[in-house]
Picture 1 (cartoon, rainbow, N blue to C red):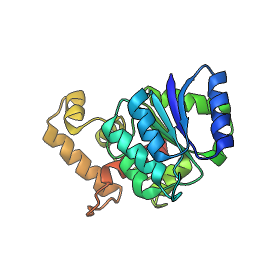
Picture 2 (picture 1 turned 120 degrees about the horizontal axis):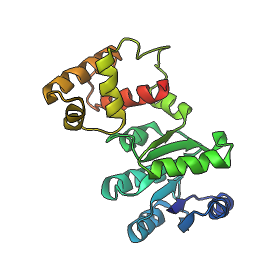
Picture 3 (picture 1 turned 135 degrees about the vertical axis):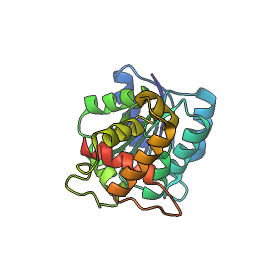
Picture 4 (picture 1 turned 90 degrees about the horizontal axis):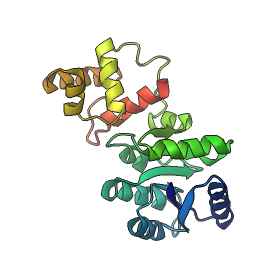
Length: 215
């Protein structure tokens, strides 16, 4: 596995490089800002980009915006956000096309090297690695005790396939039903989970996050 690292802390960056090298992972580049991340990813095409949210010069959300650009223009590179912060504005967009190949871990909650390396391998393979606290914040802390209990068996199947990143057409093919039927199921899922239509419609993402949070 080849990775690039974007982390402004010199000590943490060096620590990650050493840790990954010890695990047999090739660190193709380690940079301290978003432009460096984009340039390294474009030139080296790594399997995974490990990205801090807050990078220079403003230390706000440069890393996450760069990760979103990588997601959109270089989709073969998986993204693992490793940060102290949950930046909701762009995090929803990052998983907007499906949570496959995306991870978002909080530095303070990563307490095991093996788990961290396993998360890297998971996102490289097209899987998901989302810290439960991240999911909770992205859901706006409106998660009910059992929000999925109201879904029918078929609606749960549709939601599971949505969480795998399937399109409506892909879900229809998997379940051997009409695409229009899938659309009706998805509308019902949105209604039952209390996800109203909004100008910035992230209902599909929020539904998937609810599913992941319940697992």
